[in-house]
Amino acid sequence: MKRSIISLAFLLFWLTLSNGQARMVHGRLTAFNTYPVLNMEVKSKKAGNSVLTDSSGWFSIECMKKDVVLIRSKVFESLTIRVNEDTDSIVRNLIFIDNRDNRQVATGFGYMSQENLAFAMNHLTRQNNDFCNYNNVFELIEGKFPGVVVESRGSGGAIYIRGSSSSGARSSALTVVDGVIGGIGWISPCDVQSIDIIKDGMSAMYGSEGGNGVVIIETIHGKAQSQ
Image 1: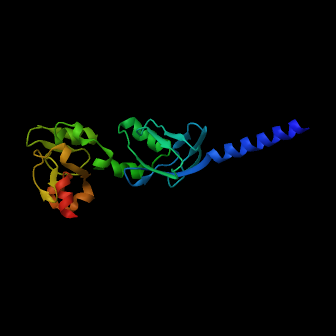
Image 2: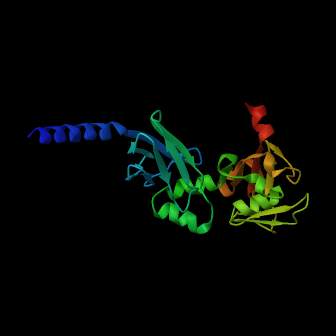
Image 3: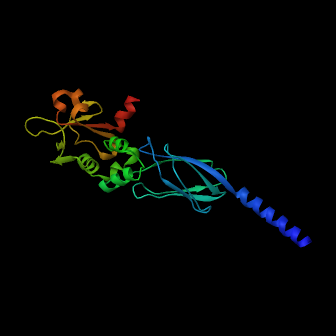
């Protein structure tokens, strides 16, 4: 009888200790520093739990006192996050791996809406891209925007946007840097803060010059001056 009581006491102590090691960690996942990522699987490695983010990108997952949170997806760069006794929340911006298949997967699995993804891909910011991987600004634009064709990549390269509603002969898109119309061949990819591609009604503010679409680039220097 005494042995049974001791065994029961030990079991209760072990359960209390085990429960004390488990803790809830809350977090949120976004993409492009703006949009919530839905239906993304979040795993706690040691606790063996798995949850999906909700419609606002939030999640709550039970972790051990010292654990590792794993976020794995084909369309986003993987994350491995260490959790300790001081970790109460995890807020991360996921980096989208852009290609045609991943765009379909991202919307098909409900990670992002088609509208949000389309807007995000037409407005690229350095937070989601390693612009420095490209040799020049023309390679950067053609590599990041599937609907854009670049010809003559020298200092005066011409950019053509598919689907722009221009009448007459084929003409290149207008290029604007930090609010000033002009060439872009001098820009280093590492100095680019953001790139926007606009066409049709959105480019009407530039008059007839914007009829073939507009490439709008903000440089790091230009952003700093505007703040």
